[in-house]
Structures are given as C-alpha cells and as structure tokens.
Length: 225
Image (cartoon, rainbow, N blue to C red; front, side, top):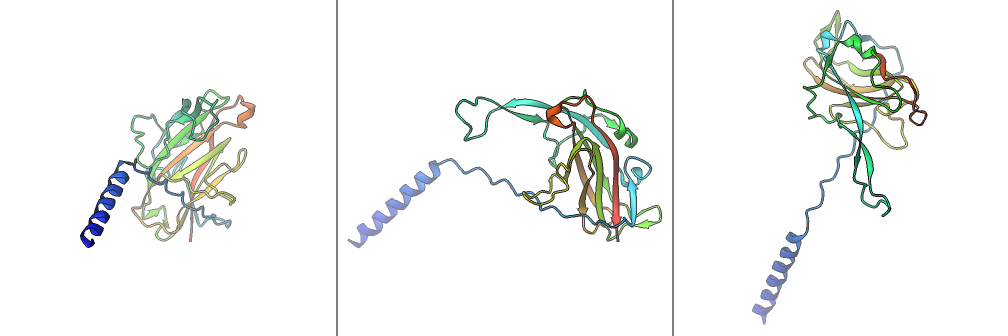
C-alpha cells in the first residue's frame, strides 16, 4: 500500500508538471517607471546651455526625426467592434534605440521649426558625458537637472526611462502649453558619467490641430551644489 501511495503521488506530480509545461509562459512584467524627483526651485549654481556654447563640453550631438501615427491592433479587452487602434512610430525613448541613421543637427538648430504643423510629433535624442569641469565649474557631486522648453509640449526620457507617477507632479511628462520640463537626471554626477536624453516634442493643443510647428525655446543642464 505504501508503494502504491508513493507511486500515485509520483504520477500526480508528473502529470501536474506536464500540464504546467504545456501552458504558455506568462508575459514578462513591464518594469515600473522610476518615481519622479522634484527639481530644486533655487537658482542653479551653474547652467550649461546645450543649445549653445556648452554643448561641446558635454559631448552633445543632437539627432532628430519625425514620429508618425501608425495603425496597430487594439489592446486586449477592447470592445468587440473595435478592430484597430493607433500608436506612434518609432518608439525612440528606449535606451537601446539606434538613432545612428537620423540626421544630426547643430545645437542651435533645436530652434528650427520642424514638422508640417497640425497634429505633429518630433523626436530629439542626444548622449552627453559629464566633464570634470565646464569652464571654471567643478561638476563633481553636483545635482544635475535637465531643463527644456519645447513649443508646445514635451515628454522626457532619461537613460531609457520616463520618470512618472500617477497622481503626482511628474516633470518628465507634459507640463502644459509652452511650459518647461525640469527633470533631475542625477542627484550627484561624477566626471565621465554618460547620460542618454530623448525628448518627444508634441504640437498642440492636439485637438485644435494648430498651424504652428515643433521647436525648442531652450535646453540646458542646471547644476546645483
């Protein structure tokens, strides 16, 4: 009887393993975005203009490309009569995105009006490297804040992530019509730190389909000590 008892358990365990292995593996969980950090409201100790003369010191090389609206499948749980949905392409905020084929632009050309107006989206990407000094300013240990003002809206990705949290101020997301985004990119930088920035510029208000275009009013790194 004891033999039969253990044998039955072994068969049941084998059957359970077989059934489990036949089930599709669950989709990997999407990592939660990092929580937003509110930037300081005091004047910066030092400001580097990455649309201008300090861009070279930080190794900035901007690249840009229009984003398009594309048709895609509706999400799971959509009403049965919904047969299609829409997305943007490319998704250029991810850290591993290859923008090497995109046109490179001069820092000052962030101010050039881009897109054809109306409902329009434009990606801007750059890598930057923190130097030991910018002019006479020693960067070591400084809090670094990216500040951009895109006409009309912007979403900011830092190292492949857009910091945000529902119900809380999230500076990396849309702040309002022609309002600056101020995103903490590091609490304490050190020389040699590499940071990837992606800015999703949006023409707006979207439901009005405005005749203006997408462009930067300002882009800078603020350092606080």
